Image (cartoon, rainbow, N blue to C red; front, side):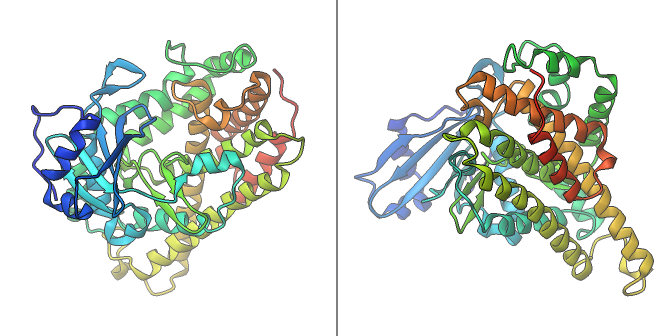
Length: 424
């Protein structure tokens, strides 16, 4: 059920509002049979939203409501309409990857809330990676998700009119795009009051980043591409904190940053977070070397994700190329020239992925919003050692992107940087 978006009757929900809210929605009320014994708790731990679990012995749901400000900085206003873009992202992609989303029960345009199934026994993937849990089905699931969400919203599948109509739905998500443009592509490379890093150990590296003109040219090019390219409908914030998992299942959540942009941004965000998990593992060891096999698994997972994504994306291009890009009428079946073009397309996408992954790593170590992979390492010198190695690789990924010809090159570089001696 969807209610019309309104601009003036919003209020943040409180725990004692939830029962009344559910009783006002027939589609939600019937999920519980009876609402007399509902258990309600707030579980949100992020910066942007209120999150509630509502359950009884019969069913359980999750209600997410945006706040009009950043929780840690209440003087930083945020658009409430971002939940609309999240809902529309789910709605657009559900035809092809609905098994990789939670079930959506309701969108309320007055309170801007989205109500969905409570995922259980799923946990936030980032938490599982910190604990050293292997998710052996993840690469298969997420590569399918990436291939389908990116292909089916691109010019390779859509005609020009359909794609422009999709773009028009998301074109106004400018405030959240602006957050990305500032926090990823600008602030970490400048002196900014919101930046933070592990002091004093990373002070020299931060100064190096601020003074590196070549690095700032590269990141500016990536920012320009982010602002102008409309390759496909992106999640916009696809990291291991926006994925919930069990050992057999993968669900993607929180696509409120959704917009049409460069494909490599989504893939790069995911790979960056897996690389940061890799570099953080030493800091989570209780005994030296106990995460050695787990680090190997993480690198194997990164390689498998790209390899499977590439294969699946190319298969879709071969079997469902109905879009206005590279129209079939122009090419013979199994055209050698067209096969070469596809190879070049994927190579360009890989290099774009590498570059955006580098940018994502830098912002999580020197910008405003960090991740717990590193933050939960209590010994600051050990943490800085992990972050330094990740930073060094990220700078290489940005400044020497074209030296990474394959995913094997990226894996090799990650191993080299992990084994280097950090200059703290």
